[in-house]
Amino acid sequence: MNEDRFPGHKFLPYLLIAPSIVVIFIFLIGPFGQSIYESFFVSTPFGTRTIYVGLRNYIRLFSSPDYLNSVTATFKFAAFVIIIGLSISLAIAQLLNQKIRGVGFYQVALIWTYAISPTIAGVIWASMFAPATGLIPYIVSKLSGGYTLNWMTNGQLALFIVALAATWKMLGYNIIFFLAGLQNVPNEFLEAAQIDGASPWKAFWRITFPMLSPTTSFLLFVNMLYAFFQVFGLIDIMTRGGPGNATELLVYKLYRDGFIHLNTGFASAQSFVIFFVISVVAIIQLRIVTQKTIYYR
Image (tube, rainbow, N blue to C red; front, side, top):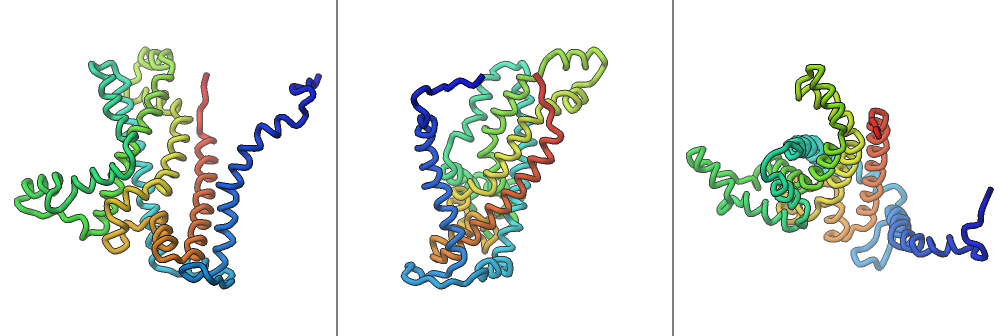
């Protein structure tokens, strides 16, 4: 039996969601459509003249060594942040899930990394690795007998350090979710495994980890988005894309081309390619992960 939940107000539900729809169109769909439109044009630096060039921006994109270098660096960066970050976070969450003294303090202390802004995180890590005054180069110099660690002259080392900073920044977020997932694993299963003679290591991989699959799949997706889109502040503070273009990830190259070089058509083409790549990777990832996800009550 169908009941009218809003008698006398047939259009009330549509009126209630109208503000949200308007906001989505103005701030999401509208700019996205404008970006696709501009990707087919070349504009003068101040936008006084636009010329239709068809797919030339996209052809230029995939024939540019600098752009292909950014793609490679971005995927290396994302792989490090996702694999290393989630592995360390899971290990720490497992330790925090044990009955140890002062566990509440450790939980709060480890979570604060996510609370600080990317800019502050970038300042902290840039200061730690400053060649002349940083703590890490000083320790390396003392331990190695005078070796000077100048990471800004080594592209691969710079990319590694920025990835390390990004991983550290995301640790708190990952730990929160992994810890919540671990605390929801039924003790009955672990006790049964212990009675059957399973070691803690085997019980973790055969029982605990499969039951964390919903949390893991969610964190895989969130960390992928983070690695592709939310590390601009770290890169801008720590390296500004250098040395050379070693740490010029896709999001930072888009910023340079669009806002510094004022090449809006080329930058718009980049934004659409990033959107397409992320969408494809996300769909594949979610399809693979959800097939192996275990939900329990």
